[in-house]
Length: 320
Image (cartoon, rainbow, N blue to C red; front, side, top):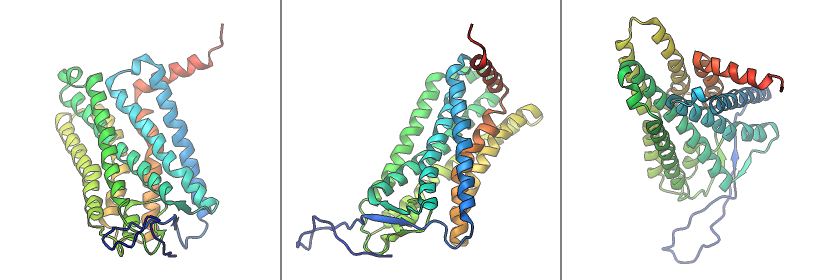
């Protein structure tokens, strides 16, 4: 699918730089795979569980004063990010592929790109903050309340939101300078950054986009994963003989593995992985962690389970 159009502000001055922006893009999604409607129903089911589980976590943290501790600032931020990240992807994905609305306008495509990558980046940064909390709590227990305060947690969380915003704005801003003079078919299930800027390669200088496509994964995925692995090496060294502590940290490590490993494998082996397999892998990576976060991490925490019981009992108690 191709088209030929030009910017309405085009002049005859040959020195004028003309940016060709298509009126729409076409999201190709999954091609040649039978019975994909069942996969979309599965994604819808996962989305509903994520929405209910993370909303429940936010309500419990907000209502119960016992959970108004620095640690749960990061937990609340993670739950909120999970809801937003799932909502940025799944409803639009279902609308496109269940109802055949795979055309998306230029501005909607950039908005989709921004919100998906923004909340995906925040998920990664939230995992760093939770890892830092566990590192200080176990390796420096006597200094925990001095190092992990409400103020420090708000600062870390605020820095994560600002860093995510800046990172994604740069990537989206570099897309707006590109001309799309040939194909408008994006080989992904959403307005993915890589497939999008590669469409402009025959018509524009995409070197800055290529640099960002390598730099951002390092900042958003590789460096955070190295920090988290390093923090758990320190934790394991400090508490190797304490089974309970290792069990407590295992939940967070499972989340880290579920979130980082599929993304990193896809990035490293993208030239060897078939397109459909890559798209399915990335879609599962986007929707499964928000569903698993409440189950694996928060709902297995005794402190949170006790608070949840109190909130539930208070909600169902008859009014006197």
